[in-house]
Amino acid sequence: DAGVTQSPTHLIKTRGQQVTLRCSPKSGHDTVSWYQQALGQGPQFIFQYYEEEERQRGNFPDRFSGHQFPNYSSELNVNALLLGDSALYLCASSLDGRLGTGELFFGEGSRLTVL
Amino acid sequence: LAKTTQPISMDSYEGQEVNITCSHNNIATNDYITWYQQFPSQGPRFIIQGYKTKVTNEVASLFIPADRKSSTLSLPRVSLSDTAVYYCLVGVPYNQGGKLIFGQGTELSVKP
Image (tube, rainbow over all chains, first blue to last red):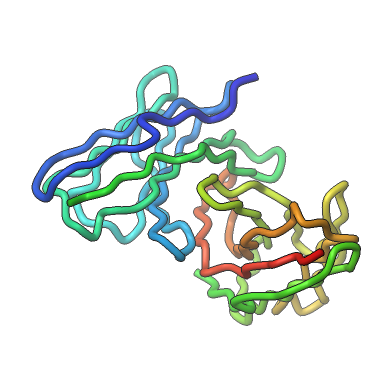
């Protein structure tokens, strides 16, 4: 049973460029959330996708956008990159519904460096 | 959203029991308390979740007093591999339409 997979694992961009990160959720999961984790900090919630729509959003500018596909996979897009966007970007999947704990399953992350 | 406060760091030795306490004075009625563990360069991993009293699984125990304004994660007989950052989260779980906010976490260092 494959867990959450993210790609690419590492990438380097320059200021002003755009980046797309990809995530495949754990088999059977229908909800995908994205987090940004700067060095030495806890993960910061960016947004959550369910049924191909953004359901929740954290305190991030519109430069951060996303998409969820019919197969539940998701993309995170960041435009006009800033140096401060350098971080580990984590994708987490979960199963919606009122059964269980709502446990999040995280991927290994995509390490973005902006120069 | 309820804010959490937990120690920045803790030290322990192999074989000891470790208790990490988290304060959440403004926890709401619908909020659950969830703990995650994170190793360097990996995504966080779910440890345990509870609403009140005590919850125990194969990895840890979670103690929640009646007023729910704090909680304690208990790790029995820690080993070197338990060295990680531990996050206390308070909120409505995702599967109930909520979102969970991570704080700075507690960096646990287990020594031989």
